[in-house]
Length: 195
Image (tube, rainbow, N blue to C red; front, side, top):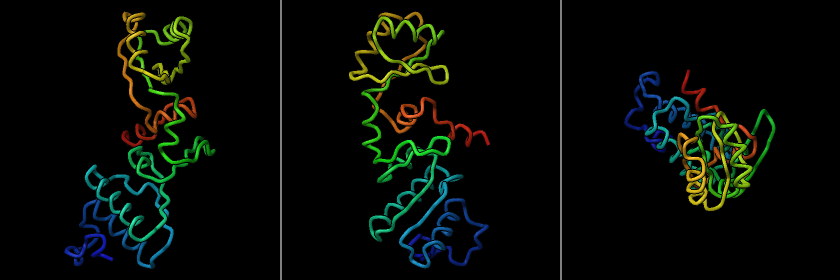
């Protein structure tokens, strides 16, 4: 098992002398000793640096693809969730969605336009009245789901440029899906970083 997780050269080392990423590999090796068909992991990459997180996730993908192992994991890292076959989104303990990532993102109506404004509530009313665009106010920013978002950005800047601090748009992310489904921003990552 040490060979499978790439720890054979460190077999004689005490676990407490290993880096966080190598410790996670030891934990995974222990969990796999009895060759389970199901592996349940609770935020397995917490505390890992980006390179160790990527290596660990690649190893989980290998386990799934080569051994047919079913892996259930909880995470607040959207890039981890993106790699899963199916995602369950929980909001305040309730299941609000269960689907593959691509299907979840298709539920968002087109591009996502995020507008930072000096007076977001007033701008929200103006955009809804003048452009017939449904907007959502989330943590002081306006969010608009719209097909052909680049055209909407042009139009909103032409109409309200002096009231806007910044505008961005892009294809929906899993965070956008969370906002779409719950009406509020996903905050776990900010909480985790402040610890």
